[in-house]
Length: 313
Image 1: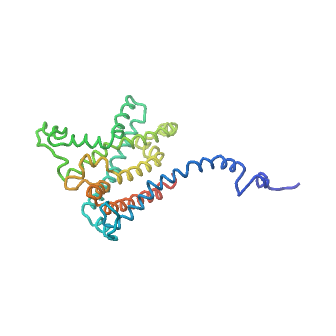
Image 2 (image 1 turned 60 degrees about the vertical axis):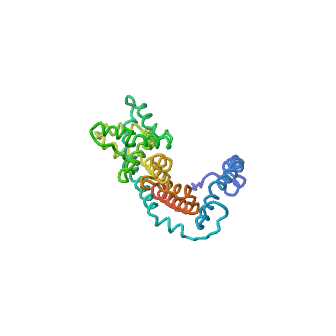
Image 3 (image 1 turned 90 degrees about the vertical axis):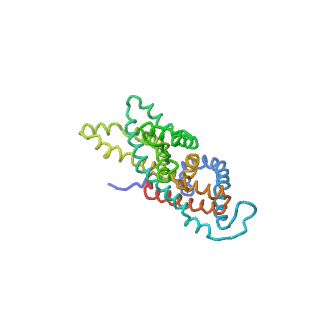
């Protein structure tokens, strides 16, 4: 009796080239023309409209330049020193952090709760999904203008309701103490529908047999949510948090029609600060420095978050 081991199918020398199997070579021959045809134009557009403007912004940030003519007055890191010490920029940075905190602690839990309610086949679920998702579809500029009227102390709905109840007119956007909180309420209203739809999609992907088995075992609603639903939605929650952080850092379109950074520059975000103090005031080099700082913060947070929390997704 003889014994032996087989290491696998015999591969002839003609079946492999550069370590690739015949099937991989066939796939490579099929995809290579597509890559050669479409990759260079995409790289060219990305280089022209992303890489080069970023490089120019970094270069201009070392000058004192108003956008006219060629930059000549070299100031080194002075623009960055002024940005990082400017009180309004620090206020804008704080506002961005506050938006992130409210998004994580209010917006996402609200979206998850509503998604858990509307994922089931209850009467009117589709209608409520549409109603809650409509604010996200609405253009940011239009939403800002609408809520500016709603918050108006003379003609707005909020002030009108307060006056009907016997109170004094309320000017929420005119007071530094209340303006940022009014803006945060609009942000939650505007974007929670997007996260709700993400969670609904994730909930519909959960196997119903798992939930039925938990019910048979006598699990309560809270137990099913925290021990089954939430763990199975972990990847969706991480994605939603990522979108909230990146979107909070880029917030601009809603701020400008709603407050324009007023009152007293107390509601600026970093992007609206860049626009107001860099573009409007024709301080292009200063605005470039703000853009570089914003880019570094955004990229650092995005890559750090993906590295730590989304490396397995």
